[in-house]
Length: 225
Image 1 (cartoon, rainbow, N blue to C red):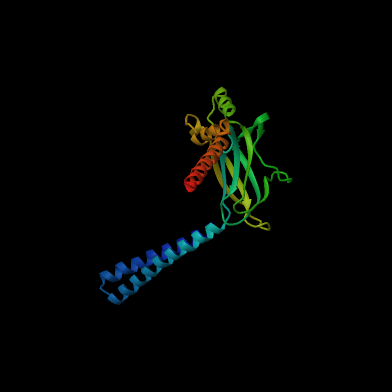
Image 2 (cartoon, rainbow, N blue to C red):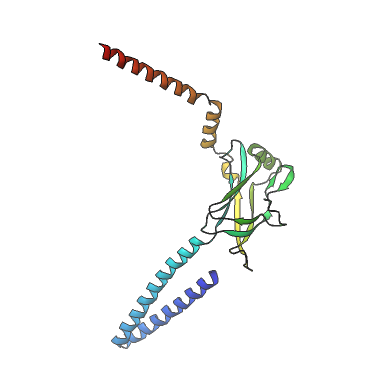
């Protein structure tokens, strides 16, 4: 699709430049019929380019879109490695290739298991998301501090848009823990509060039932009077 898009843009650009060149020459020579024709051609090219942009956008939305990121919020104190297909179709033979790898416990490079060598996923359908635990978040920061390294990790991911395709799409990715180093994670703190106060909801429910009984009791007394 990218090569087709580039070719189309080049053709439209050349047509626009040629029409603009004719417009300037005929305007100088006061050939008004040709000027009008040139303006019509330029308008048509601009309209065609706008229509193509809409078509390309629709086509892009129908293609797979693989996102890779770190999740520090879903599980308190735990960092998870997440792969998600946020596109409009399935991706096949997905492979994660690290240039600066992220390691889990026991110094294991982060990958998923598909049963096929060097393939992380045989297929990721649209909307599907997979995650696995990397390590305790605190330990990751401690390891980075001891090794005096920046907690940035990157590489690229390859996948097929069709199971029978002979070509693979290649996309770079970059993930980092650095933005979370000195930030207070409010969602995690809220989750910690709920975990430590799991009886709060039960107590509120009991209090609500007591209030309902008191109200019913007052209503009964008022009716008797």
